[in-house]
Length: 93
Image (tube, rainbow, N blue to C red; front, side, top):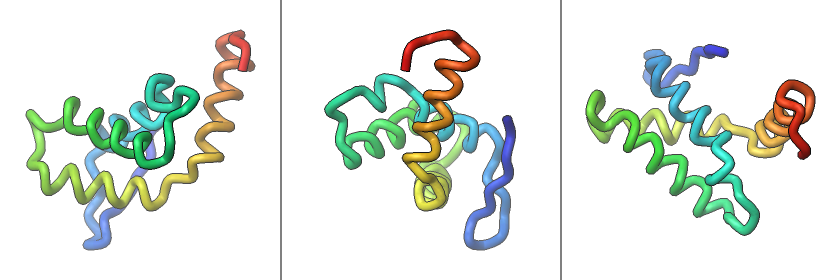
């Protein structure tokens, strides 16, 4: 699912950056038990750099990460992941 997020200057964040962020926030490794909030965000940011640094400057990745992280609601995303796992993939939550 694609969504449009704008930076504070009004420009849209590139769709592949939003997709990379969303994928990193849903990655089970990043969300494993015992991972604290600080570690979670470090993992997400690292995943973004690994996936995007060949295409974008670090300043743009940082700016997009900050905006996306500010708008992210961890509990809502976790609930969506659980619904996906149970209702669509047939996995146990």
